[in-house]
Amino acid sequence: MRRVLAGAALALMAGVAHAAPAPEGLTVDRVVMLMRHGVRPPTKAQPMPAEVTPETWPSWPVEPGFLTPHGALAVERLGASDGAVLRAQGVIPAKDCPTVRIVADSDQRTIETAKSWAKALAPGCAMPSDHQPQGSKDTRFGPIEAGLVKLDPVQVDAAVAQGVGPGGMAAVEAAHRPLLALADHILCKDGPSATCGIGGQPSVIAPASAGKRPKMAGALDRASTVAQIMLLEYGEGKPLAQVGWGRVTPAQIARLSALHALEFRLLARPYPVASANLSSLLPIMREGLTGTTAVTMISGHDTNIANLGGLLDLHWQVPGLALDDPAPGGAIVLERLKARNGKLYVRASYRAQSLEQIRSAAPLGVKGAYRVTIPLPGCAAEAQGDLCPLDKALHLLGEG
Image (tube, rainbow, N blue to C red):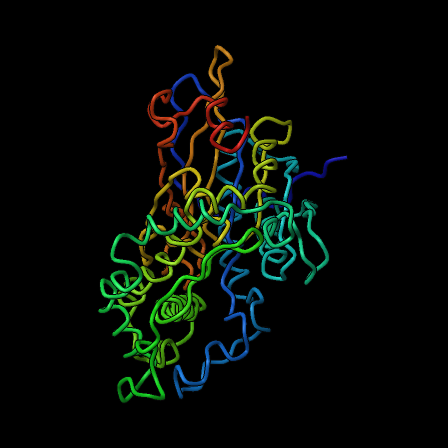
């Protein structure tokens, strides 16, 4: 028996994100969200090799890679806002507890992100998530490494090479030299040297194999990690003196974010990688758009977001981050809309907090979260404005 929704009015007051209204004569009846976990520390106790910087890295209140209490609170703000939007759309009931399918990867940060989001989406309602035991491997989020799907190395390497361009990685690195210099400025108080900095490591991409995705190494790879650490430190709300040891500004963090997005553009967004790495999650998304459950939320990682962005050719830019960089707590949202004549459509959007909203973790208020509706380029011939016919959208999501 469903429980009456506790505190529904409070959740509605927490803020309404500006979702695009349904066109006249259509209603939203299914929603699928692929969401990145919230703010976490670096995934290793020693975030980078010792020769990168002599500085002591800031401490965090949780183990490496775990969702922080601040990150959980920021995710709760998103859950409250999402709940308000879904109730306003009529997708979930205004008072009773909703039926929501939640799937989470087995990392602590993804499990706890799902819990935080669900708790705020519908306070007082029990909404368990489907996940493997914490710390185990969930093949739905790693089908390539689990051997469930094989890459075609020739096809993958060709797609990566196309993204890299004719000048190779040397040209890509040269184009990003100002950002590499900025990363070195943050890491090295007295300037880069033989014992500090990332600029001396040539950037390379190791080719794919049937069971392994291509991987970047060298200066651009290390700079991508530096960029993400600075963003997470700032998003955690650390004092500015601790963010990049006081040598980076919010504007510079946004610029550096392009290095993180670059790694995803080259390695995660190419179609043959994206389709393979999503092969076990796409059926869940398709079922969410065609089944009886009104809302499906998948709690995953930035790589999953980049994969789906590449698969569908979606682009976004969250305030405080670079183009296409997946924000902590950010989500690609697929809405199914039903017309009076019974025809079904899909609309895509990207929903996230700005970096400043993540840092403050304050209620999102009337302004709500950042949200942008994104037409599906693969549906251009059949689309009606931002709407893609359901059968075409399912095809783009790997059906048929």
